[in-house]
Image (tube, rainbow, N blue to C red):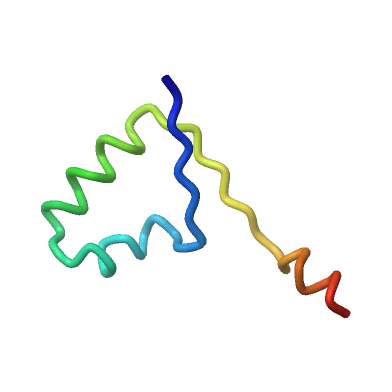
Length: 51
């Protein structure tokens, strides 16, 4: 089965949010090991539509 995890927080910042680096390493290792990551850059399209 596939699992999709979406976050506005960059993976590098997850350590600060999780707090415990050992737990963060364990979680990220299991999630990212075989993952396909897509990181979007640029201005939000929502902001453009509001103008």
